[in-house]
Image (cartoon, rainbow, N blue to C red; front, side):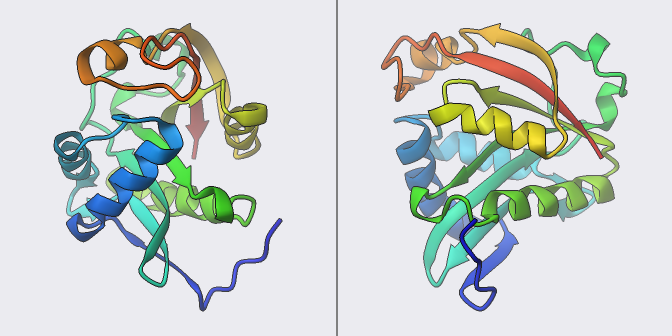
Length: 192
């Protein structure tokens, strides 16, 4: 693991002044049109409950090197890619971890774990007792699944083609499949 110099790395709540850099990093890592300005503004609004923001960014100087987008419990609805009857947690107590993204030059230094920890703390303040994520099983070396499992996430169900509608409706370009994403998502629940 790369050491983190706390004097160089700063963690703070997501704010609109970060949007441009979040969009750039998110689309670079996850594929073109994974995030857009309108969607990010909506995610930002959904991050709040009781004036508490559950989304965070990590900065090194002015450079945004990571972010965690978390939707507060009750600010999202389970869809066809969710299996709430298998969660063993009331849906109204489950936040949604949209994505965790770290610049490739800073991975392995604990930044993603710190972002998750901060989001969990704020989600708990909002009343959540668990968080749901759809983990990209095509990540290099299946690192996303390994990471979320190590953090305590439990596999609920695998969902082939979860991001296909994003390709059709939003012009998402998957870094693996291009414009017709067949990647499998692992629906995973992390209890706090």
